[in-house]
Figure 1: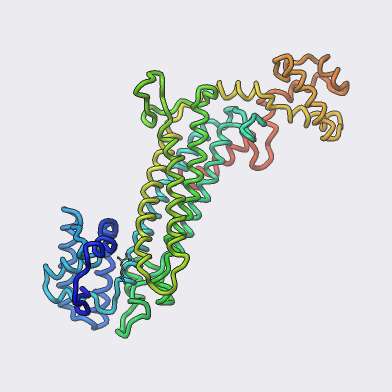
Figure 2 (figure 1 turned 120 degrees about the vertical axis):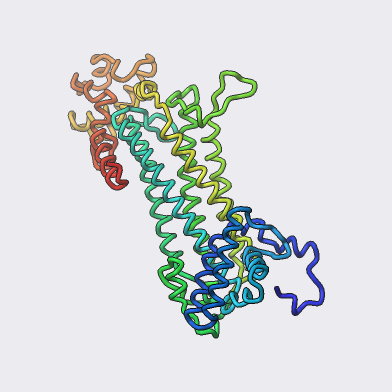
Length: 457
Ligand code: ARG
């Protein structure tokens, strides 16, 4: 393809290090779509004849059918998907195939293909995230009143509802959806027609190819267009953030499924056993989501570092942009599907959760708040009094509301028997009815909003 200038062919090592066909064959659909749009435009602008364009399009269709049926052949001599397809086109239709590359370079071609591929991947990711959101919201709906301990430092803090906890992840995933949506909007400009780096002298119509490929507009600067990989980094940044969220949820499941917690039984379909310990049911899928998040972040880092020192315009380093994006995209889709399955299929042990909330002095803040409200004690002093009550209860191995009124009044005489109504976990969650709080009514409001947004009703 460029042999004219060379006396010798490439060495075996050159061929191997240069070949991107082993991975960029994944771009074949986008490559053929972009070539079709390009040649149709060349004909419309009288740069090639209608007959030649038709012959080329027929050839491209045949190649698409071959790839679909048999896969893309991997010949390192042909370097990449662009040359593989063009070489096959020449076999099928002869020298006319050579007209396809008029007013085009592999530099704008690969930039276009890769944007199209990333756009498709974002759409698939968004569909997956929507399913995950629906799963979170349905389970939150079911458990808007199920009480569990809320934690800070993984120490029992205040009672919350399981629905509230699940809706926290719904919020995170909603921000991920926004990030992918914004990345898609920024990505959606067509580099095609930027040619190698400087544009082209042929009278092409870049609006036409942009429109044919579903882009909003052509890119404005040819140097930028062939060397910009922000769109891939935007995708990887959104993927990394999303993977972190999934990993945190996975970690909750790992903790909750452990025997000392016992808050959840994981679905069999997403667990594994042990070859030696017959009692085991391990949350492997959750652990792998946690593990894969590390790999996804690694992919993001890899491409950032690849790009950081590159002068304009194209350098071959940029061929290395695809493996991390492909890898991260595949891993993320698996992680989203696995988490959706876990959320859907989790058997939440609400009795255990409730007991844990009761045993951990989770309503101590409610006692302090009661002292402030009913006895007009400054919060800091109320905090101190409550600390003494917890200390006493702990020494007796009792819950706060198991202390007698005399015991409480010995700590502070201003306490009276109305305090008991504030000490139950139900009262505690019901009291936290501030906007966005854990009170079942608040959770149901957020669930209703989410259901509407997701079109679940
Ligand atoms: N395989 C190359 C890539 O993925 C295509 C662009 C090649 N351009 C070039 N000037 N060698 O980046």
